[in-house]
Figure 1 (tube, rainbow, N blue to C red):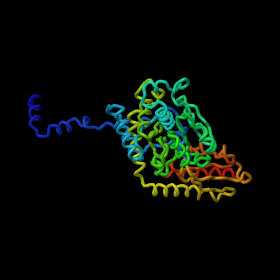
Figure 2: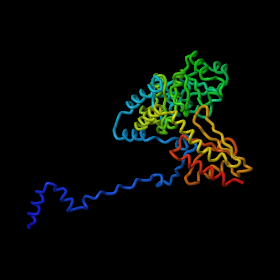
Figure 3: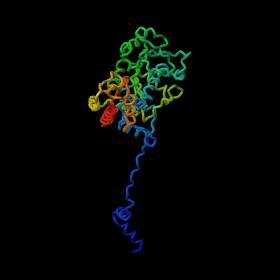
Figure 4: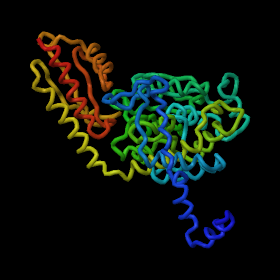
Length: 406
Protein backbone atom coordinates (compact mmCIF):
# COMPACT_ATOMS: atom_id res chain seq x y z
CA UNK A 1 0.00 0.00 0.00
CA UNK A 2 1.28 3.39 -0.95
CA UNK A 3 1.84 6.08 1.72
CA UNK A 4 -0.92 8.31 0.29
CA UNK A 5 -3.42 5.43 0.58
CA UNK A 6 -2.55 4.90 4.26
CA UNK A 7 -3.13 8.57 5.02
CA UNK A 8 -6.41 8.52 3.07
CA UNK A 9 -7.72 5.54 5.05
CA UNK A 10 -6.78 7.12 8.36
CA UNK A 11 -8.61 10.33 7.46
CA UNK A 12 -11.81 8.35 6.91
CA UNK A 13 -11.84 6.88 10.44
CA UNK A 14 -14.37 8.60 12.81
CA UNK A 15 -11.97 8.65 15.78
CA UNK A 16 -8.85 9.81 14.08
CA UNK A 17 -7.53 11.38 17.28
CA UNK A 18 -7.96 8.10 19.12
CA UNK A 19 -6.17 6.24 16.36
CA UNK A 20 -3.31 8.67 16.41
CA UNK A 21 -3.23 8.32 20.19
CA UNK A 22 -2.92 4.57 19.74
CA UNK A 23 -0.24 4.95 17.16
CA UNK A 24 1.69 7.51 19.27
CA UNK A 25 1.04 6.69 22.95
CA UNK A 26 3.88 8.87 24.17
CA UNK A 27 1.96 11.96 23.07
CA UNK A 28 -0.85 11.18 25.52
CA UNK A 29 1.43 10.94 28.57
CA UNK A 30 0.61 13.52 31.28
CA UNK A 31 3.64 15.40 32.55
CA UNK A 32 4.16 15.24 36.30
CA UNK A 33 3.40 18.60 38.01
CA UNK A 34 6.52 20.47 39.04
CA UNK A 35 7.45 20.22 42.71
CA UNK A 36 6.19 23.11 44.81
CA UNK A 37 8.87 25.59 45.72
CA UNK A 38 9.87 25.47 49.39
CA UNK A 39 10.77 29.11 49.96
CA UNK A 40 11.31 28.71 53.71
CA UNK A 41 13.72 25.86 53.08
CA UNK A 42 15.40 27.75 50.28
CA UNK A 43 16.05 30.68 52.61
CA UNK A 44 16.95 28.52 55.57
CA UNK A 45 14.14 29.91 57.72
CA UNK A 46 13.02 28.22 60.93
CA UNK A 47 9.30 27.59 61.20
CA UNK A 48 7.77 26.90 64.60
CA UNK A 49 4.64 26.00 66.52
CA UNK A 50 3.27 29.23 67.96
CA UNK A 51 2.27 28.59 71.56
CA UNK A 52 3.13 32.19 72.50
CA UNK A 53 0.50 34.41 70.88
CA UNK A 54 0.02 37.06 68.22
CA UNK A 55 3.31 38.88 68.70
CA UNK A 56 4.52 41.05 65.83
CA UNK A 57 8.03 39.59 66.09
CA UNK A 58 6.54 36.10 65.63
CA UNK A 59 4.58 37.23 62.54
CA UNK A 60 1.32 37.48 64.51
CA UNK A 61 -1.37 35.15 63.11
CA UNK A 62 -1.96 32.90 60.11
CA UNK A 63 -4.51 33.90 57.50
CA UNK A 64 -7.32 31.40 56.80
CA UNK A 65 -7.84 29.97 53.33
CA UNK A 66 -10.75 32.26 52.46
CA UNK A 67 -8.58 35.31 53.15
CA UNK A 68 -5.79 33.93 50.96
CA UNK A 69 -8.30 33.22 48.19
CA UNK A 70 -9.50 36.82 48.34
CA UNK A 71 -5.92 38.10 48.25
CA UNK A 72 -5.00 35.89 45.29
CA UNK A 73 -8.17 36.79 43.38
CA UNK A 74 -7.70 40.52 43.89
CA UNK A 75 -4.08 40.28 42.74
CA UNK A 76 -5.21 39.42 39.20
CA UNK A 77 -7.04 42.64 38.29
CA UNK A 78 -6.46 46.39 38.43
CA UNK A 79 -8.78 48.67 40.41
CA UNK A 80 -8.48 52.22 41.73
CA UNK A 81 -7.04 52.17 45.24
CA UNK A 82 -9.31 54.93 46.55
CA UNK A 83 -12.36 53.02 45.31
CA UNK A 84 -11.22 49.92 47.18
CA UNK A 85 -10.87 51.97 50.38
CA UNK A 86 -14.29 53.56 49.77
CA UNK A 87 -16.11 50.26 49.34
CA UNK A 88 -14.26 48.29 52.01
CA UNK A 89 -14.39 51.21 54.44
CA UNK A 90 -18.16 51.41 54.08
CA UNK A 91 -18.52 47.67 54.76
CA UNK A 92 -16.26 47.77 57.82
CA UNK A 93 -18.04 50.83 59.20
CA UNK A 94 -21.40 49.09 58.90
CA UNK A 95 -20.09 45.96 60.63
CA UNK A 96 -18.50 47.93 63.48
CA UNK A 97 -21.15 50.62 64.11
CA UNK A 98 -18.92 53.47 62.90
CA UNK A 99 -19.65 56.40 60.60
CA UNK A 100 -16.63 55.58 58.43
CA UNK A 101 -13.54 53.38 58.33
CA UNK A 102 -10.34 52.68 56.43
CA UNK A 103 -7.72 49.95 56.29
CA UNK A 104 -4.30 51.13 57.45
CA UNK A 105 -0.75 49.80 57.52
CA UNK A 106 -1.16 48.34 61.00
CA UNK A 107 -2.61 49.80 64.19
CA UNK A 108 0.35 52.20 64.54
CA UNK A 109 -0.50 53.68 61.15
CA UNK A 110 -4.14 54.00 62.24
CA UNK A 111 -3.02 56.09 65.23
CA UNK A 112 -0.75 58.30 63.11
CA UNK A 113 -3.29 58.91 60.35
CA UNK A 114 -6.17 59.32 62.79
CA UNK A 115 -4.24 61.97 64.72
CA UNK A 116 -3.36 63.69 61.45
CA UNK A 117 -7.03 63.66 60.48
CA UNK A 118 -7.90 65.40 63.75
CA UNK A 119 -5.13 68.02 63.57
CA UNK A 120 -5.15 68.91 59.87
CA UNK A 121 -8.55 67.72 58.72
CA UNK A 122 -9.04 67.86 54.95
CA UNK A 123 -7.17 71.12 54.38
CA UNK A 124 -4.32 70.37 51.94
CA UNK A 125 -2.15 73.22 53.24
CA UNK A 126 -2.51 72.06 56.84
CA UNK A 127 -1.89 68.45 55.84
CA UNK A 128 1.39 69.50 54.21
CA UNK A 129 2.51 71.26 57.40
CA UNK A 130 2.66 68.07 59.45
CA UNK A 131 4.80 67.22 61.40
CA UNK A 132 6.05 70.82 61.69
CA UNK A 133 3.39 72.28 63.97
CA UNK A 134 5.53 74.81 65.79
CA UNK A 135 4.70 78.36 64.77
CA UNK A 136 1.39 77.34 63.15
CA UNK A 137 -2.13 77.91 64.39
CA UNK A 138 -2.79 74.15 64.41
CA UNK A 139 -3.68 72.53 67.72
CA UNK A 140 -0.66 70.51 68.78
CA UNK A 141 -1.24 68.90 72.20
CA UNK A 142 -2.61 65.43 72.95
CA UNK A 143 -3.55 64.47 76.51
CA UNK A 144 -2.76 60.94 77.72
CA UNK A 145 -2.79 59.27 81.12
CA UNK A 146 0.69 58.41 82.43
CA UNK A 147 -0.24 54.78 83.00
CA UNK A 148 -1.22 54.57 79.32
CA UNK A 149 2.25 55.49 78.11
CA UNK A 150 3.87 52.21 77.04
CA UNK A 151 5.44 53.30 73.78
CA UNK A 152 2.42 53.20 71.49
CA UNK A 153 1.70 56.87 72.21
CA UNK A 154 4.78 57.69 70.10
CA UNK A 155 2.60 57.07 67.05
CA UNK A 156 0.78 60.26 68.05
CA UNK A 157 4.03 62.23 68.07
CA UNK A 158 4.75 61.19 64.46
CA UNK A 159 2.36 63.98 63.52
CA UNK A 160 4.38 66.55 65.43
CA UNK A 161 1.93 66.60 68.32
CA UNK A 162 3.16 67.05 71.89
CA UNK A 163 2.03 64.60 74.57
CA UNK A 164 0.61 66.02 77.80
CA UNK A 165 0.76 63.32 80.52
CA UNK A 166 -1.81 63.45 83.33
CA UNK A 167 -2.88 61.21 86.20
CA UNK A 168 -6.06 62.41 87.88
CA UNK A 169 -9.32 63.81 86.57
CA UNK A 170 -8.34 67.18 87.98
CA UNK A 171 -5.03 67.14 86.12
CA UNK A 172 -6.79 66.13 82.92
CA UNK A 173 -9.27 68.99 83.07
CA UNK A 174 -6.54 71.45 84.00
CA UNK A 175 -4.44 70.32 81.00
CA UNK A 176 -7.16 71.22 78.51
CA UNK A 177 -6.50 74.50 76.70
CA UNK A 178 -6.86 76.07 73.26
CA UNK A 179 -3.90 73.99 71.99
CA UNK A 180 -5.50 70.65 72.89
CA UNK A 181 -6.12 68.68 69.71
CA UNK A 182 -7.13 65.28 71.07
CA UNK A 183 -7.24 62.91 74.06
CA UNK A 184 -5.62 59.47 73.64
CA UNK A 185 -6.64 56.32 75.54
CA UNK A 186 -4.78 52.97 75.58
CA UNK A 187 -7.48 50.39 76.12
CA UNK A 188 -5.11 47.73 77.43
CA UNK A 189 -4.41 49.97 80.43
CA UNK A 190 -7.99 51.06 80.99
CA UNK A 191 -8.12 49.66 84.51
CA UNK A 192 -4.71 51.04 85.54
CA UNK A 193 -5.52 54.72 85.06
CA UNK A 194 -7.46 56.98 87.41
CA UNK A 195 -9.81 58.14 84.64
CA UNK A 196 -12.01 55.41 83.18
CA UNK A 197 -13.48 55.19 79.68
CA UNK A 198 -16.80 56.84 80.45
CA UNK A 199 -15.30 59.73 82.43
CA UNK A 200 -12.65 60.25 79.76
CA UNK A 201 -15.29 60.59 77.03
CA UNK A 202 -17.54 62.74 79.22
CA UNK A 203 -14.80 65.28 79.89
CA UNK A 204 -13.77 65.35 76.24
CA UNK A 205 -17.31 65.99 75.05
CA UNK A 206 -17.81 68.78 77.58
CA UNK A 207 -14.83 70.56 76.02
CA UNK A 208 -15.56 69.49 72.42
CA UNK A 209 -12.28 67.56 72.15
CA UNK A 210 -11.95 64.44 69.95
CA UNK A 211 -11.00 61.15 71.60
CA UNK A 212 -9.02 58.21 70.22
CA UNK A 213 -8.70 54.71 71.65
CA UNK A 214 -5.99 52.17 70.79
CA UNK A 215 -7.45 48.66 71.14
CA UNK A 216 -4.84 46.89 69.00
CA UNK A 217 -5.10 43.35 70.44
CA UNK A 218 -8.40 43.68 72.24
CA UNK A 219 -10.53 41.14 70.40
CA UNK A 220 -11.83 38.71 71.44
CA UNK A 221 -14.49 39.30 72.56
CA UNK A 222 -15.92 40.10 69.15
CA UNK A 223 -18.24 42.73 70.66
CA UNK A 224 -15.23 44.97 71.25
CA UNK A 225 -15.22 45.69 67.52
CA UNK A 226 -18.19 48.01 68.01
CA UNK A 227 -18.18 48.53 71.79
CA UNK A 228 -15.95 51.61 71.77
CA UNK A 229 -17.68 53.19 68.78
CA UNK A 230 -20.98 52.77 70.62
CA UNK A 231 -19.39 54.13 73.79
CA UNK A 232 -18.60 57.42 72.07
CA UNK A 233 -14.92 57.41 71.10
CA UNK A 234 -14.41 59.52 67.98
CA UNK A 235 -11.66 57.28 66.58
CA UNK A 236 -10.93 53.60 67.23
CA UNK A 237 -7.68 51.89 66.16
CA UNK A 238 -7.19 48.13 65.94
CA UNK A 239 -4.69 45.65 64.53
CA UNK A 240 -5.85 43.52 61.62
CA UNK A 241 -3.31 40.73 61.88
CA UNK A 242 -3.86 39.43 65.40
CA UNK A 243 -6.96 37.45 66.47
CA UNK A 244 -8.91 38.66 63.42
CA UNK A 245 -6.32 36.83 61.28
CA UNK A 246 -6.10 39.37 58.50
CA UNK A 247 -2.81 40.41 56.85
CA UNK A 248 -0.29 41.20 59.60
CA UNK A 249 0.59 44.51 57.97
CA UNK A 250 -2.97 45.84 58.24
CA UNK A 251 -4.99 47.73 60.81
CA UNK A 252 -8.33 49.49 60.94
CA UNK A 253 -9.12 53.10 61.72
CA UNK A 254 -12.81 53.76 62.27
CA UNK A 255 -14.95 56.50 63.72
CA UNK A 256 -16.33 59.90 62.77
CA UNK A 257 -16.47 60.44 59.01
CA UNK A 258 -14.84 63.88 59.04
CA UNK A 259 -11.76 62.56 60.85
CA UNK A 260 -11.57 59.49 58.59
CA UNK A 261 -11.77 61.77 55.55
CA UNK A 262 -8.82 63.75 56.90
CA UNK A 263 -6.90 60.57 57.68
CA UNK A 264 -7.45 59.34 54.11
CA UNK A 265 -5.94 62.54 52.70
CA UNK A 266 -2.94 62.22 55.01
CA UNK A 267 -2.19 58.76 53.67
CA UNK A 268 -1.58 56.99 50.35
CA UNK A 269 -2.17 57.26 47.44
CA UNK A 270 -2.01 60.98 48.20
CA UNK A 271 1.37 62.69 48.41
CA UNK A 272 2.72 65.71 50.23
CA UNK A 273 1.81 64.26 53.63
CA UNK A 274 3.33 62.33 56.53
CA UNK A 275 1.56 59.09 55.64
CA UNK A 276 2.57 58.57 52.00
CA UNK A 277 4.81 55.65 52.94
CA UNK A 278 2.08 53.86 54.93
CA UNK A 279 0.89 51.95 51.88
CA UNK A 280 -1.71 49.22 51.99
CA UNK A 281 -2.23 47.44 48.69
CA UNK A 282 -5.55 46.33 47.28
CA UNK A 283 -4.86 42.73 48.22
CA UNK A 284 -4.33 43.63 51.88
CA UNK A 285 -7.38 45.90 52.02
CA UNK A 286 -9.64 43.22 50.54
CA UNK A 287 -7.99 40.51 52.64
CA UNK A 288 -8.67 42.57 55.77
CA UNK A 289 -12.33 42.97 54.80
CA UNK A 290 -12.80 39.23 54.23
CA UNK A 291 -10.96 38.38 57.48
CA UNK A 292 -13.11 40.78 59.51
CA UNK A 293 -16.32 39.52 57.94
CA UNK A 294 -15.33 35.91 58.66
CA UNK A 295 -14.28 36.73 62.21
CA UNK A 296 -17.58 38.41 63.08
CA UNK A 297 -19.57 35.49 61.64
CA UNK A 298 -17.50 32.85 63.48
CA UNK A 299 -19.05 30.65 66.18
CA UNK A 300 -17.15 32.28 69.06
CA UNK A 301 -18.63 30.05 71.77
CA UNK A 302 -17.48 26.96 69.86
CA UNK A 303 -14.06 28.48 69.31
CA UNK A 304 -13.67 29.28 73.02
CA UNK A 305 -14.58 25.68 73.93
CA UNK A 306 -11.95 24.46 71.48
CA UNK A 307 -9.32 26.66 73.16
CA UNK A 308 -10.30 25.32 76.59
CA UNK A 309 -9.98 21.76 75.33
CA UNK A 310 -6.49 22.45 73.97
CA UNK A 311 -5.42 24.07 77.23
CA UNK A 312 -6.72 20.99 79.08
CA UNK A 313 -4.57 18.68 76.92
CA UNK A 314 -1.40 20.56 77.87
CA UNK A 315 -2.42 21.06 81.48
CA UNK A 316 -3.24 17.38 82.02
CA UNK A 317 0.10 16.36 80.54
CA UNK A 318 2.31 18.49 82.79
CA UNK A 319 0.47 19.21 86.04
CA UNK A 320 1.37 15.88 87.68
CA UNK A 321 5.10 16.20 87.10
CA UNK A 322 6.75 16.40 90.52
CA UNK A 323 7.33 20.04 91.49
CA UNK A 324 5.14 21.47 88.76
CA UNK A 325 2.08 23.67 89.32
CA UNK A 326 -0.23 25.14 86.69
CA UNK A 327 -2.81 27.89 86.50
CA UNK A 328 -5.30 28.68 83.76
CA UNK A 329 -5.44 32.45 83.24
CA UNK A 330 -7.71 34.56 81.04
CA UNK A 331 -6.43 38.15 80.65
CA UNK A 332 -9.15 40.71 81.28
CA UNK A 333 -8.21 42.69 78.19
CA UNK A 334 -5.70 42.31 75.33
CA UNK A 335 -5.32 38.74 74.04
CA UNK A 336 -8.43 37.77 75.99
CA UNK A 337 -8.09 34.00 75.48
CA UNK A 338 -7.40 31.06 77.82
CA UNK A 339 -3.71 30.71 78.63
CA UNK A 340 -1.76 28.31 80.83
CA UNK A 341 0.97 29.34 83.23
CA UNK A 342 3.35 26.48 84.02
CA UNK A 343 5.59 26.90 87.08
CA UNK A 344 8.11 24.56 88.64
CA UNK A 345 10.00 24.28 91.91
CA UNK A 346 13.67 24.75 91.09
CA UNK A 347 14.66 22.39 93.88
CA UNK A 348 12.83 19.59 92.06
CA UNK A 349 13.18 20.66 88.44
CA UNK A 350 16.62 22.08 87.61
CA UNK A 351 15.66 24.35 84.75
CA UNK A 352 15.48 28.11 84.24
CA UNK A 353 12.71 29.65 82.18
CA UNK A 354 15.34 30.80 79.68
CA UNK A 355 16.70 27.25 79.32
CA UNK A 356 13.19 25.89 78.88
CA UNK A 357 12.53 28.43 76.14
CA UNK A 358 15.76 27.52 74.33
CA UNK A 359 15.15 23.78 74.55
CA UNK A 360 11.67 24.17 73.09
CA UNK A 361 12.93 26.55 70.41
CA UNK A 362 15.84 24.35 69.38
CA UNK A 363 13.88 21.10 69.49
CA UNK A 364 12.11 19.39 66.63
CA UNK A 365 9.57 20.70 65.96
CA UNK A 366 10.54 24.14 67.19
CA UNK A 367 8.08 25.65 69.68
CA UNK A 368 7.79 29.26 70.86
CA UNK A 369 6.37 30.14 74.29
CA UNK A 370 6.56 33.21 76.53
CA UNK A 371 8.94 33.56 79.47
CA UNK A 372 6.74 35.35 81.98
CA UNK A 373 7.76 37.76 84.72
CA UNK A 374 7.95 35.00 87.32
CA UNK A 375 11.06 32.85 87.66
CA UNK A 376 10.86 29.22 86.56
CA UNK A 377 7.68 29.63 84.57
CA UNK A 378 6.41 29.86 81.02
CA UNK A 379 3.07 30.96 79.59
CA UNK A 380 1.23 29.02 76.88
CA UNK A 381 -1.56 30.26 74.62
CA UNK A 382 -3.35 27.98 72.20
CA UNK A 383 -5.39 30.24 69.91
CA UNK A 384 -2.64 30.24 67.29
CA UNK A 385 -2.09 26.46 67.35
CA UNK A 386 -3.00 24.38 64.32
CA UNK A 387 -5.13 21.26 64.75
CA UNK A 388 -3.32 18.66 66.83
CA UNK A 389 -0.35 20.84 67.77
CA UNK A 390 -1.52 21.03 71.39
CA UNK A 391 -0.52 17.35 71.75
CA UNK A 392 2.95 18.10 70.42
CA UNK A 393 3.35 21.06 72.77
CA UNK A 394 2.14 19.00 75.73
CA UNK A 395 4.56 16.16 75.02
CA UNK A 396 7.58 18.40 74.49
CA UNK A 397 7.06 20.48 77.65
CA UNK A 398 6.51 17.38 79.73
CA UNK A 399 9.63 15.82 78.22
CA UNK A 400 11.81 18.78 79.19
CA UNK A 401 10.35 18.97 82.69
CA UNK A 402 10.94 15.25 83.21
CA UNK A 403 14.49 15.46 81.84
CA UNK A 404 15.29 18.21 84.33
CA UNK A 405 13.64 16.54 87.30
CA UNK A 406 15.90 15.64 90.20
